Picture 1 (cartoon, one colour):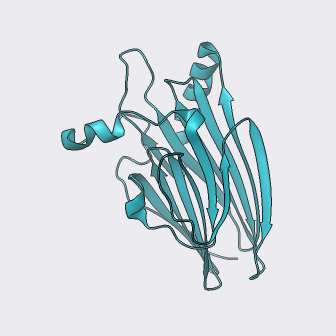
Picture 2 (cartoon, one colour; picture 1 turned 120 degrees about the vertical axis):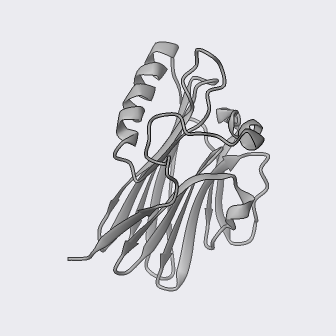
Length: 205
């Protein structure tokens, strides 16, 4: 049986409580971008972490591949390294510049969308991504469910609260990993928009 190891790098990454924030960086992390301005990207390369504001991260190792999971202000980065190549999925704000080199997919996240790509090294990638605009009561219920899910997530991060009565924005990633496939689910809440962004990505080897 293939071995699987998870290493987390942020001491607050799996806590549903609000993480301490450096006052010097409060203005950067207290407000998410507008959920309606998010873009889903896929690259056949790595994306330099300095291009994104990484808040928490984790690494997963299997015998035949490794994957990096990062949570950012606008969403996440999932970077798979297998057979000498790298595949990277990013959700980011539309105005956030990212490299165009080796970019295979760039789509605004609206409604429910999906896509598939077969790579030359035999990796098959399938993704679905959606933006849900919810009524306030429904949003709060979903948000509470995600707080509970965050306790067992591969990586999670709670952002500072923007308004006195708004819940704190939350991001989390869950994974199911096997020797021949990897399933990644990411969830991001945007209380100011009453929105939840959900992505599901399946890598088959």
